[in-house]
View 1 (spheres, one colour):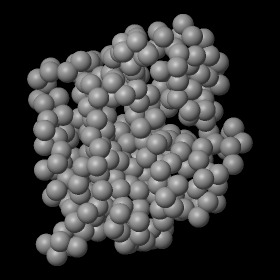
View 2 (tube, helix red, strand yellow):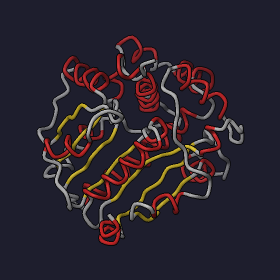
View 3 (cartoon, rainbow, N blue to C red):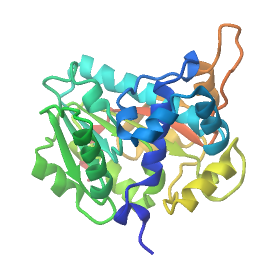
Length: 303
């Protein structure tokens, strides 16, 4: 059976966009994020409905799997920060894998002059996003390059070379909400290509799920609900990393952990109020990671 994303727009990408749109309209401080363009990428009737606070609370508590609304909010804020830091440090290029309905290349265009930004995604989802930008009259900056690709079937190096993504430049690689949907061999190939193309000082930011989630061990808050949701959408998860093994995983590709955040750390950093109380519980299946290229020469020597 074909994956949904081969024939239709990714449903999980749509869910993420709805969550970002809802978050941008929030009045609750800990729930509010800055993706104001997400509202323009959802259907008009939905953008109007999301302006109702009761609807947003219902969406976060009932319609979305437990803790996923909160997770998408903090993931957006976390990667926004890494993205803006790369722009401020004048990285040469940024590559977004499986960009979905992400809007950072447009939202941060004022800071991104001189930085080439490449967005990779399956053609169906990318076309839907571009059509919505056009429909809402959102101008596309000239430094953005859109690249349609099926990560499981097409050659990523050929695609990158064809669109002018350069090797050995200081680059930021963003893999948001992607790895868990890939087969292990595709994950391995993706990270090997990242190391092949990345210049010294490059960074990789991504999220992953624990491998135990794939084994249905039911160890984390919201695990059953989110696993059931992605399976029902025919966008199943295939890859996870064992708890405590992230440093080993990255070391295989000449990468070193710069920052690692599990659900508890994310709640501490993003959902704790002035009284020290956690006001939003995050789905426990995911972690966020920023890694740095530090061993490129020795990795390349190994082939």
